[in-house]
Amino acid sequence: MHTRTVAIHYVRAALRACPSPSEVLAGAGIPPSLLADDRARVTPAQYTKLIQILWEVLDDEFMGFGPRPSKRGTFAMMCLLTVHCPDLESALRRGLAFYALFDEPLELSLDDGRFSLHVPGDPDHFLTESLLVLWHRFSSWLIGRRIPLREAEFAYQEPAHAAEYHLIFGCPLTFDAPATAISFDQKFLRMPVVQDEAGLRRFLRHSPAELLSRRDYGANTAGHVRRLLGSGVSGLEAVAARLGVSAPTLRRRLAAEGTSFREVREQLLRDQAVASLVRGGESVEELALRLGFSEASAFHRAFKRWTGSSPGSYRA
Image (cartoon, rainbow, N blue to C red):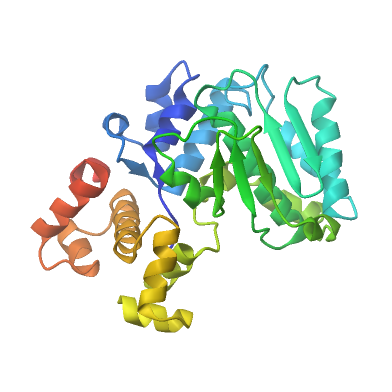
């Protein structure tokens, strides 16, 4: 299981405009007690369900954070218009023109390979960042290949949960920038749209909520290390050999990304543990053994350090 879990910050931020958060949390299978600890995590499936329920309760794809509601189905209609464009640039410009028809005071612009966005009065910058992620990943889907980001810029100070931004955007980050924007190579704008209406119907069954829950999206060194560890390669030396570098070089590259081999490994174990506990069907003892712990008590201590809660809290 390689998929990253989602920080509780995004759950709290999503619920800020919701009049009945307890009902939404129950529908998504998220224990309310997790909201109290900044270290808590939820699975992508839980987060996807949370977003879907919020859209249904609020009838608003902006989840109460936009200048005015965006009725459910608006995103799907935009997709239907863009999927018939010949290339990515024309598709993105048609999508921007579509949203402009609603007289939304959202500031969206595309300049070569730089997509910028400003949402007035957006608490926690939740909608702003969600829309950036959504447009980026929808663009990748349109052309049938992942678009690596060159840089992500944010027109506000670095937040306390800044480590999550590396997992979400997988590129160099700049805070206190003049504008909020993502940048990628212009060559992708010229690539043809390879999707059609039949593919769009399949895509929309779980999107765009599912797009917002995907976190392991970067192609940086930490991402490569995580994928190798998740596939069964163990140990720093073995991972370095698979990547074709020396162990010291691998350590330096991870340090340049603000992490370490041990931290990447612990994040993977944490995410695997959370997913198993939420899914059920495996005892804590079995899970501890599978993750490489000598005894269940050692796993309990590690899990409490990772998430701030006991394994039982997640199973509940």
